[in-house]
Length: 115
Length: 116
Image (tube, rainbow over all chains, first blue to last red):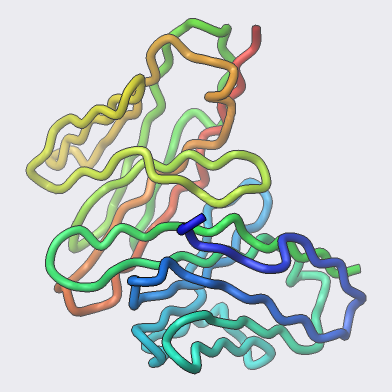
């Protein structure tokens, strides 16, 4: 499968625990995005990378959230001291960058449930 | 504030029937408009992408229209199948240049259910 992959697909954790999600983009894509989606809503932008540089962060990304893309390939999203309000689907997307259509391709998501 | 509104919120139709989903947007500067299909528990999958100059685009049984003057789009599904049951999300892209962040504004989606 040459699409965007995310791991794990589901995560159940207790409030206060830390969790880390991984995203592997399409190999030739140099842009990588993280989104959060709650039930019945569209995805909301969290942050994006161009290669290893994190270029923009949404105000939704509190200081408990941190994202990295150390080698410009896969990315991780860590949530520290999880809260029940963090329960959501976390989506990763990747896209090529340059002139023309820069369509974002989405992964299957990681469903987080905080008890 | 950039916004994308979709209607109806949910729709139930019989297998084999046609349906049309609506999307109104206020996004600036407009770059392109996309329709995504999202199955329950899965990531969105792109159906069509339209730029400012395109009025209609088809992908199999899916036909999207765009009226950039009225800032409206529609997605028409012909001869619906059970596998069409999903959420359909309208997404508008605002990009000041090809070198900036492509900002996507997502609608909340239309939940379509096809019944046999």
